Amino acid sequence: SFMRLAPLLFSFGEAEVPNAGGCRLGARPVNRLVEASRSFGVEIKYNSNDGYYYAKLGKGRGAEINFLKKTHTGTELALMLASRVEATSIVGNASSEPEIDDLLSFMIASGVSIKREKDKLLIRGKRNLKAVEKFIQAGVLFAPGKAANAGGVATSGLEMSQNSMRLTWPKQEVDSRLQEIMASIHETVVKAASDYGYPGNYMVGSNIAGFIKVAEAMLAQGVV
Image 1 (cartoon, rainbow, N blue to C red):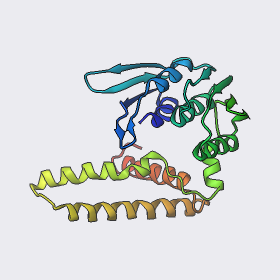
Image 2 (cartoon, rainbow, N blue to C red):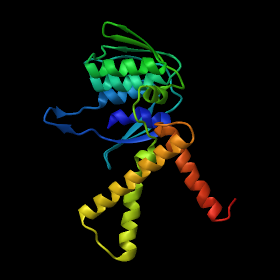
Image 3 (cartoon, rainbow, N blue to C red):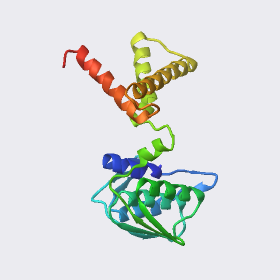
Image 4 (tube, rainbow, N blue to C red):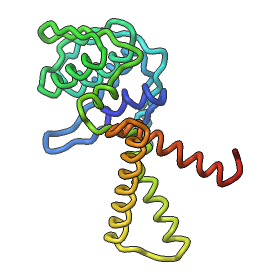
């Protein structure tokens, strides 16, 4: 859950994440993650009533962290928090698993300055990164939340339809309708991107398709 903290903070200025659970490997202590977050100026508090951590971005600052015990999750979180701060940060006793290497490569490609000295990372962040562009250049299909989460919105619509018609659809019926909706969204996004000169670009296609839908609704209502 804490892997969502940094992206949510930098996107919305605040975040709510549930306390980490566990698995066969054991519990997931988060004290190192909380302490690391606070080092970067994040204001974070735990609510024992609902089991959620509530965080605000704060002013943001560079930090010097030295993990007492190696933690790949802590290292990843520190990297993400440091990546958007225009200051030098140091992460000591950093983990070096393959996923850390992948994250480092991605961040460097996105414009973050990172230097590794054995188990120490020196990071100089940038306020505006080029992550989306790197996805697109690499041929990775990247869609904004309004398109990727359309299934969630569609589920609410299907629920309201059932309520208004006093029907109860079986699971298979709901799944079938959702698949049709998502396939239609995919086709609309791809067509919009192609029609406006950006073939294969989900980001542009989603934004254009969304704008057209809103514009057509406003015209139909006589707003413009």
